[in-house]
Image (cartoon, one colour):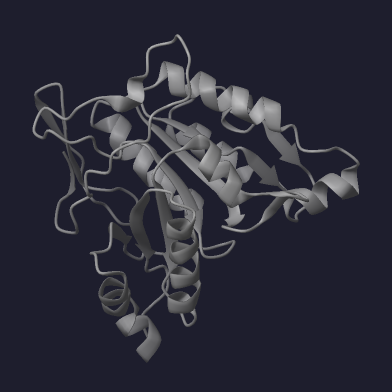
Length: 263
């Protein structure tokens, strides 16, 4: 069981069966406190770019590893600088090589399809999938961060949504708490559901002060409209998640900490 103390319970979301292969599958482990599988493995997408996907992913990776799991991060595509991948590399204390975390890096700050055209270098999807399978085989727990929003193009006919479908992990949507969040969140979640992908829940990023009516009411309305509680929220300045993770008969905890000015 994975629980966020003081916030919300992470639901036990079954993983889809993996593609055929001879290696052992560490993703389908059982919680010692439940008969259901749980999402120690997530694909994080967002309602837009700059909503806090990397920040949320790094928080999760650090907390899960501190709780005793061998969580590996992945950021298949970086466009512009490589700061997001480097943040995830730091979150796992360098346990996973940077080029495995981030197999495709474009210097152009744009969607991968745009960057590929500008740099005359098509996205190497085979390498992305190979790196994912390597991590999936070697680690019990994966946190994969997408690029931009749900429908960002990677090639002309292949989008972030298709990447998530290929990976087969439960999808969590990072929502930045601001005006417009309801529309963007609902459009994203409805498409995840339309595609038949497992929806893990909303990660609610309260990066800014809630100084307008939209920001003050977004969380409650999302829970009402989606019919389920927020997976967890990130408070302004939060630098750690407080988790209780049951694994192998033990329970580990992390402390929630904040530093002023952190977003």
